Amino acid sequence: MTEARLSITLPEGVWIADLSTEHPEATVRVLAAMPDDRVGFGLVRIEGPGADAIVEGMRAATDVTSLSVLRRDERGAVVQFETTQPLLLLSARESGIAIEPPVEIRGGVATVEVTASRERLSKLGEQLRAFGLEFEVEYLREEGDAERVLSDRQREVLLAAVENGYYETPRRCSLTDLAEDLGVAKSTASETLHRAEGAVIERFVADRR
View 1: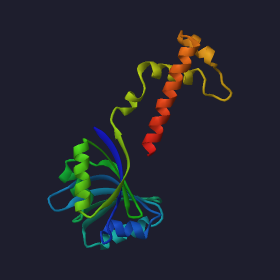
View 2 (view 1 turned 180 degrees about the horizontal axis):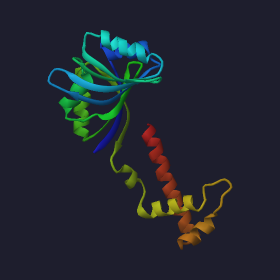
View 3 (view 1 turned 60 degrees about the vertical axis):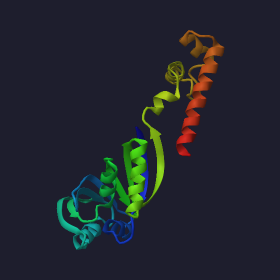
View 4 (view 1 turned 90 degrees about the horizontal axis):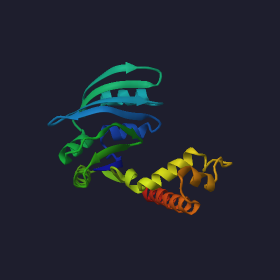
């Protein structure tokens, strides 16, 4: 399975895209959503300056067929609604993927996290394009990668180094002290730690690429 985070640019003319673009200082957080054959049902938390304006804009939108404000406070409002333009939901349904809440929308861009096979993620991309949704992949991460980056021995040595204060400034533990604690030669501890550090750094850089 693959974990992915996507930044999806919502098209102009869609009410949520237009409203969040008009009020970029506000955040629309989708707490729950479900598609039907022709409509989508959603529960959102709208926060920040412009939250009230977005709620009123939703009331006026022709594609929002029902709306109820469930809670309102000084930070914003919780709104339940129905829309005939559930583009993200329809894309996810057609690709067989469940979008993991919360989905955050700001300035016309939705940040979405999903977990699925590579095949289904590819299909999701096709569906997003079919609905006119442009997107960027912020990251792709194979489930279990973190465990495969280091060998058991490398993980043991690296954790021991952290726990003993080898990476603190000033150090509470020298390489000699670490080797003695692990019961290995200093050269063995040094080589194992160096390989572990290299693997972690390479993974860090790869994730950001």
